[in-house]
Length: 167
Image (cartoon, rainbow, N blue to C red):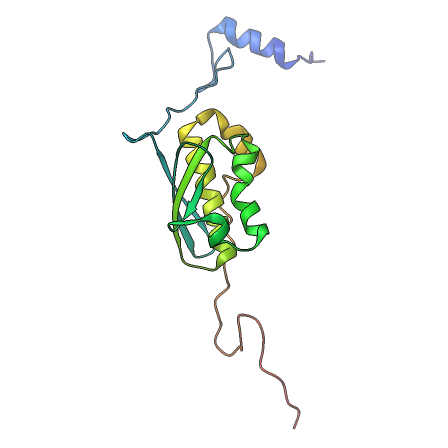
């Protein structure tokens, strides 16, 4: 009968033989990316949602958020959309530490708020790469790929058929 071995003993055998798997290291190493900051001390990122595209710049400041040259509370009237914008900053505990300036176009208010949230999250990771695990866990770095389904021929909408008439 063959002897069963644990993974640790196999690892020891591989190290003794000088065999190391590609990309594997004996010690855990966490390599953080370099911060991407321009000469004005800002980080830039693009966020997308539905058909909205947001260009976002963050820099150290007092926590002011500007959307298309307006305050975010003025641009987004609904409190839910205002909350969506602040989610990545709250998750990273950086609400009053960064000023956010963004321009957004396309889609509607909900899509624009989602695009800005995505852009803020990406810009935060460019400015402070150590925040990436927190934002990734919250799901802020994932681009929501859902979009409106196109209309098909022979249909009233994407899936809705015309009303059927027997006579």
